[in-house]
Image (cartoon, one colour):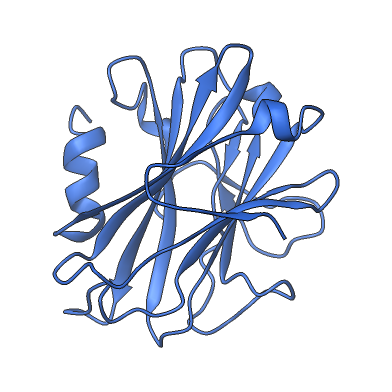
Length: 198
């Protein structure tokens, strides 16, 4: 297991896993609620470059990957594949409720950051102060080694959307930073911040 990140901490993927070409992003929780993990692939100005760079359950771009039964949303460049919208309570064998895939070599050059967010879909009125055991972990898909994990605290009293962390270009490589910034208004609040032009 990788080490735990605290809010604001960065993890240099290029140094810790220099041969990694594909990263896994896993999300898990223990509360009876339906959470969704999404990604905003941002340009220099902190906004998505095109609508297909917003990867979420409602994306138009979807495909079924080899070995899987249900489609995943994905970016046009093929760099980010979002989560399968798993039924409530379903868990993968490794304990993750949802996961995403990042193919670093495929990410378009105009994408500078990949922001990973988590939102509560239902039940309505639930906030992250009601959600226990919520975490985000990053692992090397080539070796299956977990690199780092960010465990959310329960101090989001009114928020139903959280910026979990972001991948940022660091020279020729990437780093991951834990953010832990909450918002009120669910996924729409994040769309209004990072995808308002569309």
